[in-house]
Image 1 (cartoon, rainbow, N blue to C red):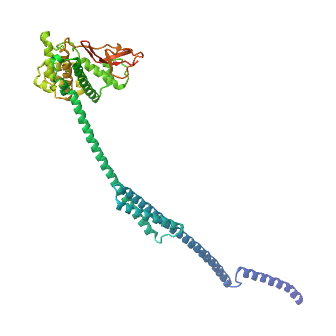
Image 2 (tube, rainbow, N blue to C red; image 1 turned 60 degrees about the vertical axis):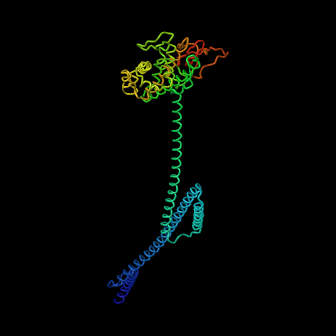
Image 3 (spheres, rainbow, N blue to C red; image 1 turned 90 degrees about the horizontal axis):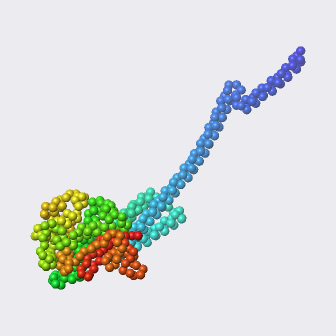
Length: 462
């Protein structure tokens, strides 16, 4: 029995021992304590310590990486600031060179030796600074305190800009003074030219222009004297026409429509030739009834024919050297005063006067026997005086001078006509007549005995 029991127990003990050994081995491998858990706690702490140690290692590694990145960023930032400081210094030097060059230009005229030398030294100095800045950039030698460098560079640049603006301001001021001086000089020349023109125009239109006839006697009157008076008469008419054109333009007149109303259907060679239409109208009105001894003045009686010649010559001599304004003031009931009133009311239509001057005050004054103190009427009275003198001289001849004009579309004849423009076509065979046609008569012609004074015509455009 005993042996059986031992043999039976032994295998069991062996299996138990092996099982126990395996458990111990597993516990030893897993860190589990066999009895009270002490070994287990120690194993867990060791595991935690290992994990903590790993975490510290990783944190230290990250810290070292972060420190390396920060150092690299700081270095880049420093380099960037240093380059910006170098650029600021570069631009400051360029501004200084610009200011020095502006000073050099100003010092050239008027010549300033000290200013030129100072500007030259500044240019050389700033060029050296630019060269040094280039070498610093190439050799990576930047300023240790770039902030101060940038601040100083900005100050230098602002000073250079202020200096440049100050120099240019002085230069522009000097140029402005020169221009003002030139303008003043030109204005004086213009005023002098205007005075000369007015003086010339006054001599042409005043009575003094007929001084060549001062010693004229009735027995010595010739067609050449008549031509002289006629030439001055036409000049005074054209002066009045220019004044009328100016007043019409100022009043906003449609000059094209006015020209078409006076002479319809005319095709002009040039646009400015339309003024001849107004000149034709003025001549037509002023010379109307020229062939009558009394000029068709109402209630005007004349002596017998034998004494008329002397009477007209005396009227010519009486008015020739007197200003019309003075004559009208002294003899407002004279025949010439009557002539001025009639011709003014005939020439200047009420609608025209109202449009030009905004009222009819001049017309009303003339109608009541007075004479306006205006530039317009002064020009008119000068023109009226010349026409009156021409009429007086025309009836001083024996036989008296006759007036004529040609009708529209009449063939041009060099014997009786003269073109007011240069557009007249010369005949191919040099004959005195051409196929050119007359659009209208501008200035009438005259005949004194066998002497023909050509009328001035405007030729139509084909």
